[in-house]
Amino acid sequence: MNTDLKTYIERYTELELDLRKLIGRLSGTLCGECTRCCCDIIHCKEAIKSPFLKLIHRQADRFDDREGFLSATGCTLEQGRPSVCYEYFCDDHFYHQPDDLHAEILKILGALLLHATRNAQGNTALEDIKTEEELDQLDFLRLGKQLEESVLAIGIIRAFCRDGTLPEPALKTLRQIQIEE
Ligand code: SF4
Ligand code: SF4
Image 1 (spheres, rainbow, N blue to C red):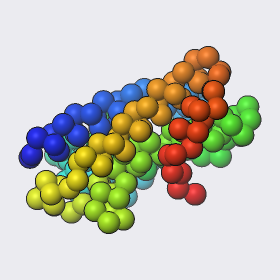
Image 2 (image 1 turned 120 degrees about the vertical axis):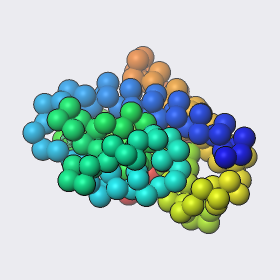
Image 3 (image 1 turned 180 degrees about the vertical axis):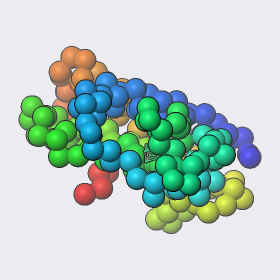
Image 4 (image 1 turned 90 degrees about the vertical axis):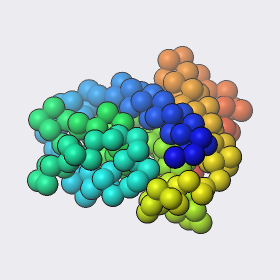
């Protein structure tokens, strides 16, 4: 693994852990009481097919053929989950948002990992790159910039959740994060 990839992985892991913490705080009550599980083994499989995600979680041996990474207490992957696992919020989450701005911010929050990894090779995101050799060839200068945009965005969202304020320039920064519709 080259130094640029190693540095990117360390920073990405910090972002993912911050994201998991913030999403847990914002959606924990609703998801904690929910009896429908929206995890799907199809997504768990992405985490063992992706060389990039495997370098992050290093837990491919914990994959179970029936349950994937899902256990009685939730996902066993501390890090290296596919970005879709953070992107999805069911309609209940949007129903409980106080206004459209909060709903938009929630969508942006869910899009931050994908933003950091988008277009790593053509239209292909980092987690969909097929081999470790290909990972080593990527332009981590650009990917690092995208990653720092996501880091900046999570800081803005954290402040918004804490203070309820969102100055116009900060909102403009957040709106540079592309949301998949
Ligand atoms: S996202 Fe919705 S369906 Fe999934 S666990 Fe949370 S509340 Fe339940
Ligand atoms: S959160 Fe974990 S258990 Fe759920 S789909 Fe994603 S990888 Fe699988």
